[in-house]
Length: 415
Image 1 (spheres, one colour):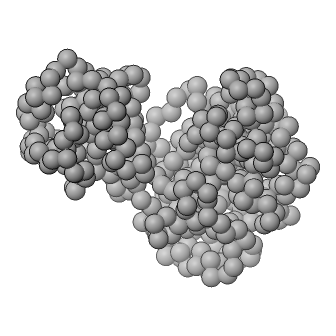
Image 2: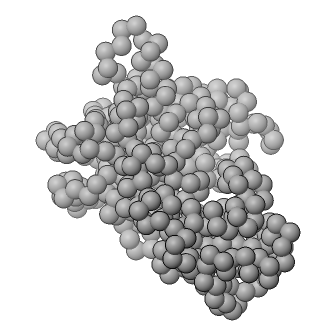
Image 3: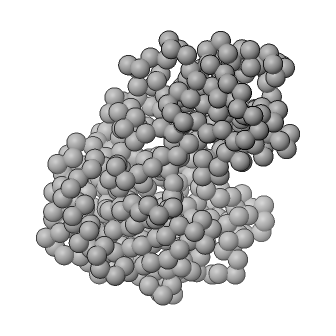
């Protein structure tokens, strides 16, 4: 069973939300955050990217930067730019991209559920990234940014969400960078809160979609606080962390593509000959070619696009990891032909989220920065959940969720 609870969210007043809200900390660098914040002192970047308050070049992991995050968080509350609700609520957060809307429930998930595997992962985390986010949670004593969960489709929850989204939203804006729509409602009726808690309690699992490092950091800090408290009871606020939970059927995973700097000493023809051992290779010409099914790939090399279709026998449909296109391409092209053994550390490879379009792959190869690009058909939510349920881990850079959650719509304090 998945344990969740409502919480007293800390939120911007309606009139200030568009000045406060921001993109997540991990989708832009310090200089991009500095530029986006500009002279807006209410921007959440002052809390989640506080290095922008220091001279250019200041290390974002400098202890002064974390301290500045906490000082700014307190300032936002003192100035009334963030205000805590007076009772515990759930919230609905809707995102609209390309005419499609997905509706998430903002809840507090249970730290022990993360530790015991009720909250399921599909990616490995890096300790240095965990520690960075743990420091941020510690100094602020809050989950400033939510994590992104999926849950099995549930008609009762759909009906409850629809009841609230039929009303005028508390927040309703179009984000300036991507043009996606964001709306927000408060679920404050006691019987609805109880019903949501009960529906989640009947679920065998929740699934991390995006935010593995934030999830790990939030859970580890909660467990740390429990250990440090001699009077720990188990119901303290630090036993929970903030998540936006979406029905799996509403979510879209888009492609996550690869670009490589060289052909590992091969000529273009030698490379294509090597690829043809395990793939049916079809030249498609200069027009962009997009993969049209599982086990079909698009390759861009020397101004031409190619369709690659994995041959029968090169993958195992009964292996939840081996059947993934990211595994097939990693094993049979990146490793076997190009000599790229570790996607996490090899400097010859880079990754491009499908939100940028396949034109971005062409651009990076045509510029001479990269030699070859490989586009993959996106993973499905069913594949992700099956892999998480089996206890397996996906290869690196497999999933790209869009739209990203905006930060600053609501914050969870650990006290």
